[in-house]
Length: 133
Image (tube, rainbow, N blue to C red; front, side):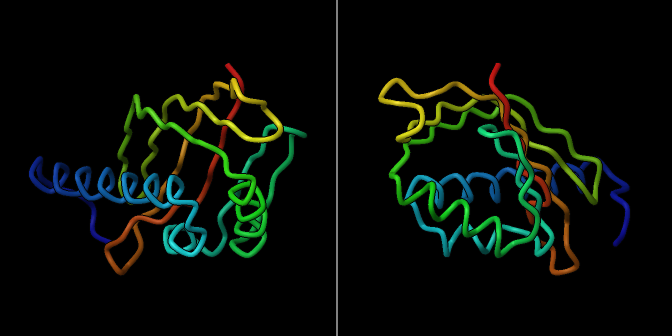
């Protein structure tokens, strides 16, 4: 993987990251676990809030998220910060997560998605993290 050397390369890579993040959010909003799968690294780690735990590996993360998405949550992501240090990057922000566990008012969370730039030129999520503020 080549190191980013110019401002133009940095802006291109940053734009690709935010496009990829936006498409991942669309997949979450559509409750499309198959589409979500296309954004995850094979060794992805999901840090869950309740109970505090880590789920490791794409099949295990997809199983967990599939169950959560079947509960028909509403998720509203608000990205606040992007930090690109290629070949990794983080998109962090706030979200409102509504499901059977949170009740109709939902739960405000802070989230962070860490991406890795793969050899195919796409960004894949290697870590999903959230916590209550």
